[in-house]
Length: 200
Length: 249
Image 1 (tube, helix red, strand yellow):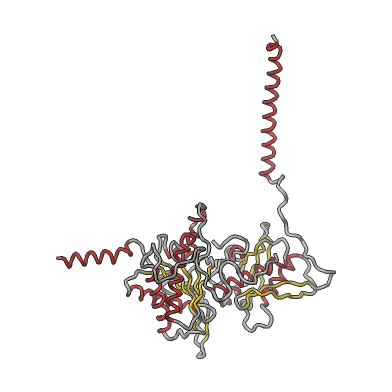
Image 2: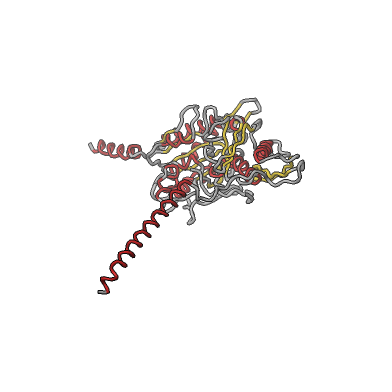
């Protein structure tokens, strides 16, 4: 008799369990949808809009890395007044790099190369568009090319916050190589093994 | 009759490597609009890396064939080739040896070999075409050591160093591979064809020595160390780590 009295209770519990499972699936579906649409993902690291510098008009110091005798050597460059904004700073860094090391008669940096444009990718990659002289005036062996590209990469990453890698373009176009030894159609960090990935 | 049979058997074994695709691929660096390093002589003549690399390559091919070897070039004329075109020209079949020939920026010989060995179990890494060289790091080390030994023999006054660097032209090669940089045109007079021929002769000796028995290293060539290819670099740059690279990012 007791069992007969408790039967509706069982049914209620069953329905409650079924409803609970459905609710969990429903919630999971909504969460999945939100995740796929990116609404619940943490905001992707964005490039900050400024680099730390002193009061307005004061100089800024950039660390620029050059290939010297088979090594990368750092030179500190003063730019005054400090460039306003991140894009201007990145442009100044690359321009300083293209000047070549001080006091060296034979610069490892290709002569007459100019910056044609600087673009920030949403993927944290800085795209540096260089004039064709960067390619045509390059004179060096495999190691020289490696150090040249690695020097540009280190110079940018040491001075511009939020940048993960650097990719070069020549006259607005992707090129497979600058000097015929190292790949330039992939970001420089990958091409010179600086960010954990090897050249592929 | 017996002599005919002997000749047939001899011919079969002579042609077997070619038929099975056993071949040495020689890659003359640069070409076309990409001259590579350019040296201007005292008489005002331009000596271009692309021409020297092609000359050494042609001499090497001739020398190899004269010794009964089989080889081919990725380019036989002055034309530009991308890195991927060079890998494609090497062919999809395994090669006995691959040598990419360039000039260095100084008076020494530099030999570069792939650095990254295949990760066991990582099939994607092992069989990725652009990374297939990872399967041959030991064979490439044997080839590099044979090249080093032969060049030291032919040029005892020159420094011959082996570096490990994952150069992309080596990455897609299915077989022992190395990039060899000969001394710059400022350090060796390449206007004298005997010098290119001398380098080619040493390279031919090395290739023949390293490929006599593909399965086992030649006894005359020191075997690679237990941790992989031997680094023998008196100069600082070796491997994936660049000296003095800043740590600040």
